[in-house]
Length: 342
Image 1 (cartoon, rainbow, N blue to C red):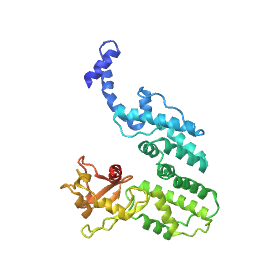
Image 2 (tube, rainbow, N blue to C red):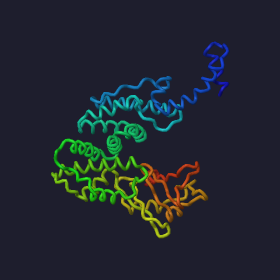
Image 3 (tube, rainbow, N blue to C red):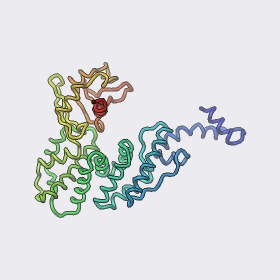
Image 4 (cartoon, helix red, strand yellow):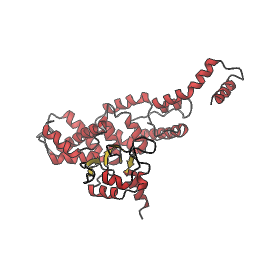
């Protein structure tokens, strides 16, 4: 409060009066803190003494790099608790360019090792928050890093495939023609259609995976192998499932990324059949609340993150109790069910 700020300021200056300009600056401090935390939370916290200086990372020493990342994650958690924030990246903003430059300098084995160190040292939330900072201009870096946490073998294949595409004079991927584009579009369907950056990154990762598979098979023909392309897409996304499109919905089936790697369409349908009203608590159209049965009968799903989906119904997206787009977290529902199994 203003009184708290005045008391703090007067204590700092030994009880002397505070001029109007100083009070104005003090009142602006909360806003400045919010902006600083939004721009660079770890740097701000270190600057004001909430956390100590962050340890440097020596990527040439895997064990030392892992220890430094763990220490940084601990600092990030302190910042999150102190300022009531969600997961924050474990790098300062000025370090992100250096991270990208390090990745760019490495060969495919070195890049895979860097991704492995990140994925093994950080939990899912902090890995995602960190990779988000490189995703803008290094989408394959970010996608492969997230993939490494779920399937190291495929992540390494993606990194190697990217190098193969750049280094070989042989054709390890098909021509970017109508047939290739249509094959990819048919496989992906509507998956990630509103997550344009993710869909683009997934396609790049799939092409790199395809290149690695082609090289290992000794196929340098440049002719599209549709089965290999579908495998590559499944490998890098975890699989595409379709759901909905019943008679009453008046819509075609929606394609989404499976909430669990390798989940079949029939298993996904079983999860949706088991949806309860508690799972959709607070969900509503602009006019009225909806039930789980309403979503099964009339809903259409759209990817909104890993294991998460926005629900389209009645000409728009469902809203939550907070007035924002309602997100159906099927991944969490599956994890909860696994925890209570005997």
